[in-house]
Amino acid sequence: MFFDSWAGLVRVPRAGALASLGLVLVLRVSGKRTLSKTKAFDLG
Image (cartoon, rainbow, N blue to C red; front, side, top):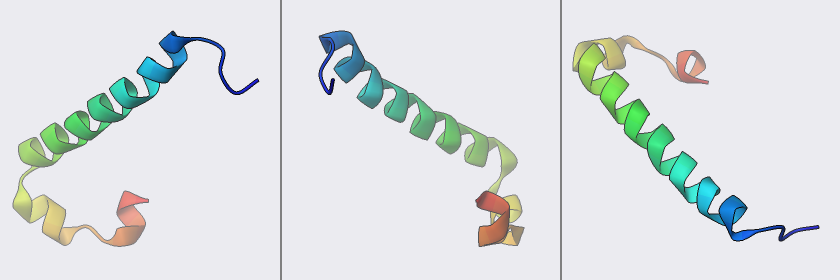
C-alpha cells in the first residue's frame, strides 16, 4: 500500500535534507580545488 503511516512520510524529507547537508559538508571540507578536478563520472 502507498500510505502506511505518517512516520514514513516524515522520514523521506528528513533523510533527503540530511543527505544534502552531508554532501555540502563533505564538499566544504574537501575544498573547491578537489571539486573542480572531479568529473561527472566520479560523482555518479
